[in-house]
Amino acid sequence: MGEMEQLRKEAESLKDQITAARKAVQDTTLQEAAAGITVVGRVQLKTRKTLRGHLAKIYAMHWAVDANLCVSASQDGKLIVWDTITTNKVNAIPLKSSWVMTCAYAPSGNLVACGGLDNMCSIYNLKGKDGNVKVMRELAAHTGYLSCCRFLSDSEIITSSGDCTCVLWDIETGTQKTVFAGHQGDCMSLAVSPDFKFFISGACDFTAKLWDIREGVCRQTFGGHESDINAIGFFPNGNAVITGSDDATCKLYDLRADQELITYQDSSIMCGVTSLAPSLSGRLILAGYDDFNVNIWDSLKSERVGVLAGHDNRVSCIGVSADGMACCTGSWDSFLKIWN
Amino acid sequence: MSSKPHGSNNIAHARRMVQQLRIEASIERTKVSKASADLMNYCSEHARNDPLLMGIPASDNPFKDKKPCTIL
Image 1 (tube, rainbow over the protein chains, first blue to last red):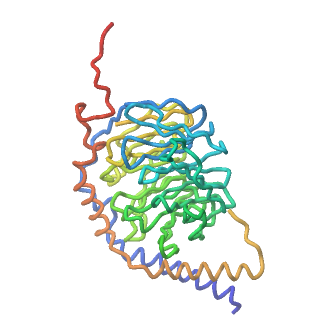
Image 2: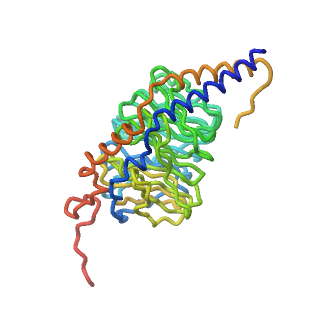
C-alpha cells in the first residue's frame, strides 16, 4: 500500500474514532437536561443611545473593558472611540486604508487595532504623550484580508485572516510569534478564552477550531454548520463556544464534551448570522442577522425570546459591555445603537 | 477554498492531517450530562447579576436619560 493510501486510511479511522468517542459521552442532550427549566420571559430592550458620525457602513465594534467606551470601524475610513453614555467621540482616527473589516480595544484601554483588505493589522496608541493618536505598529505578513483581531495585552495580539491562518504577534517587534494553520477556508472571526490560554476561530470551511495559544496547536475542531462561520464567541465560563453562520443558525459546542450541544434556529429565519455576543450570565445570546435584526435566544432552551429591530440595514457587529449593562449594535446603516 | 498543489506536497499535507487528527482523537471527553449541568449551573448562579436578563431599574441605568419630559 502506498504511503498516501495508508495515510488516507489512518485519517478515516481517526475520524471514526472521534465520532465514536463523542457518541460514547452522549448520555443525554442539553435539551433533555434543561427540560425542567422554564424559558426566559420575553426580553425587551430599548435603544438608549444612537451613535451618529460614521459616513459609511460600520463593519466592526468592540467594547473597552472600562465599560463606557467602545471603538467602531467604518469603511468611511475612520476608527471612532465613543463615550457611550454621552455619545461624544473621544477619538476619530483617520485610517490609511478605508477597507477596514475589524477593530479591537486593548484590555488596558491604551491601544486600539484595526485591519481589513490591506492585509495588515494597524495598532494605534490612544495615550501618546502629545495627545495625538498615531499608528504605533503595522503588523504585515498575512497574505489575505484581516477579518478579526483581539489583544491579549499591550504587547500581544491575535489576528485571523482570509489567508486561512491566525497569527499571534509580538506588537513591540512587529513580528509573528506563532502561525496557527489548519483551517481550509478563510478565517472569519476569533475570540479569546476568559483565561487567555486559548482562542477559537470560525472559518469558511464551516468549522470552528480551538487553539492552544502557547503550544501553538489546534486541540479541537467542531463541524456541523452547513456554511461559512462568520461569528464566534466564548460562553462566559470558557467551557463552551457559540458560533454564527451563513446557514442561518447559531450553535453551542461544549469544549469538554467535544461536541455540539444545541442549535439556535427557526424556520422563519433564512438569512445569515453576522455577529453574536452572550449576555453576562450566558443565558442570553444576542445574534445579528443579515435581515437587519438582532434575535435574542435563551441559550439553554434554544427559544427566541426577543428581537432588536431598529437598524435600516444589516447588523454587522454586536457586543455586550464588560459589566453586562448594555448591548451595542453596529450596522451598514452607519449607526451604532446602545440597548438595554 | 485554497487549491492544493499536486505531488509531494499532498503527502506532507496528508501527514499533517493525520497528525492533527491524532491530537484531536486523544483528548478526554466529559459526559454531556455533566457538561450540560455545568452550563445550567453557571447560568443560574450568575443570573441575578446579568442586567440584560434581569432588567435594570431606571434609577440604576446610566444609559437612560434622566430628564423628565416637558410638554411644550
